[in-house]
Length: 202
Image 1 (tube, rainbow, N blue to C red):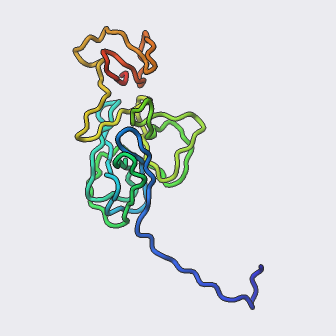
Image 2 (tube, rainbow, N blue to C red):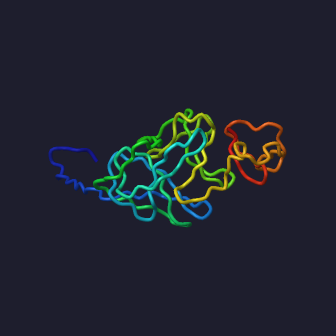
Image 3 (cartoon, rainbow, N blue to C red):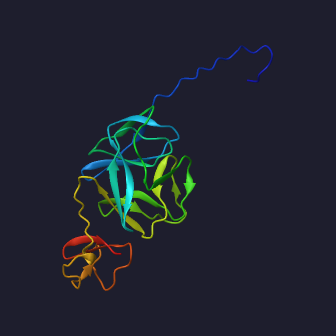
């Protein structure tokens, strides 16, 4: 049908958005997602929002923020196991997000050398992607990381990954990869097992 001077008038209704739903993915005993929005969020239901602060080259400390999410702020969303979604209510945010290491993108972008949130060997963290992949719109990621993986430690949680190479434990003990094969030399940023503990080589 074409438009002409005899066509009936059309009416458009613009409805203001009040919230945004973000799908969560379950891994272990919790559900996760990342988010990066152009507008501020006053409240989060179904999950807790965290910013990330780097601790050394291989660790990202996830710190909860309770005063909402400022616009253009990368966050990690963590909910209970099998929680399907988080509902983000748009509104004013007052959280202090200084020193947040998480960046983000509002549109889909080509992957270069960022670390993106994911799960490998049942461990949640930030990992490198395969060249040619894309980072989805409104997702958070890390840039400027020296390692190929960053272990993620939430405030109040005990991580199963220990940097045993820096401990006084037997650092000459055999090292194995996560499939159980012994390796002669750990590659920086890789995940390994030594003395019964998982660690990221530094």
